[in-house]
Amino acid sequence: MSDFSSPSIENIVAATTSSNLNGFILEVFLCGLYCVVFAHAAWRLFHQRKWILVAFLTIQWMISIVVLALDWFATNLAYLRRGDTAFDTAQTLYYLGFYAGKVPVVEWAFVTIQILLCNGFLIWRCHVQSGKNIVLTIILSLVFVASIVLGFITAFPTKKMKDDTYGTLPASIYLAFVASSAGITLVMSSLLVRWTVRGKRLSVKSFLLALVDGAVPFSEVMIFLAFLAVVSLPSIYNSGHIRKLLVDEVTVYLQLPLPQLAGLTTAIISLREARKGLSSQDISEPAYSQMTFTRTILVPKGQE
Image 1 (tube, helix red, strand yellow):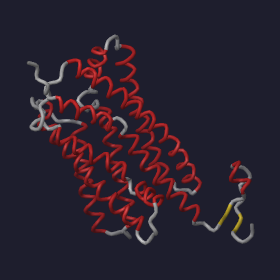
Image 2: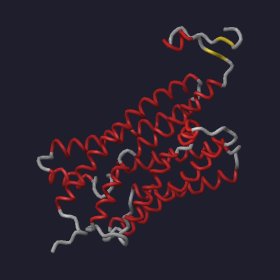
Image 3: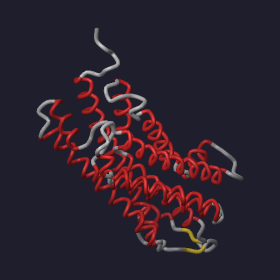
Image 4: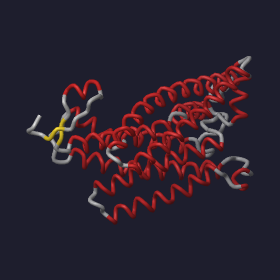
């Protein structure tokens, strides 16, 4: 009698190849959306002379492009150049590091930096929105520093972690990093949403905008990754369990587009702040300029 709790080789190959390919397609889609939002935000912030924020967004965008290029290289190598069979594709992904919900060390270093940059941006936003509350900023910063240390360890594992036969130590360090990042984003998202809707008449549109301003999508993905990291611990399911295979497959769908989502989060928030800053100025543009982006003339209100 066969053990239905243990996946077959065919199940593992199918899960590995399908999740990585579909995850890459999702990553490409989010990257295209991210590029459009980034260009719009950078253009507005550039004209408002917010150079530091433009440089910050540019660094994040460059990291996202590097990660996408690495994923494209791995996908091209596994599916086209060495993908004579599904088994060959899965084996190539395994040797490249794209298996069991993991990514290669070099790429994971960029992913970690992208997550930390997004968290740092949200801490700065919470600091401003809270009226520069020092206590809140210190607490968030301490957790942020801890996540930096844990992220550095996960990106560049020590010899002891590499020699861990059962993978308990690397899994625990990864769980601590994801959990700390998820915790800090959850707190910041909750506070930002609360401050956004406070004193306003709540509607569906304002509620959805509050979710965007509060980086809720990014926060939810990090929380879900933390949950998956818990159930991925060797003490929960061993590597030969069918549920572990399902967890690994879902993790791939979340991890591959994560750098694009982190960059998209900061770009959308920056774009909305740039538009608020422009609308708060006591100027207006003629309709002709708005439609063609030419012959822009700033006219004081009351003198149009």
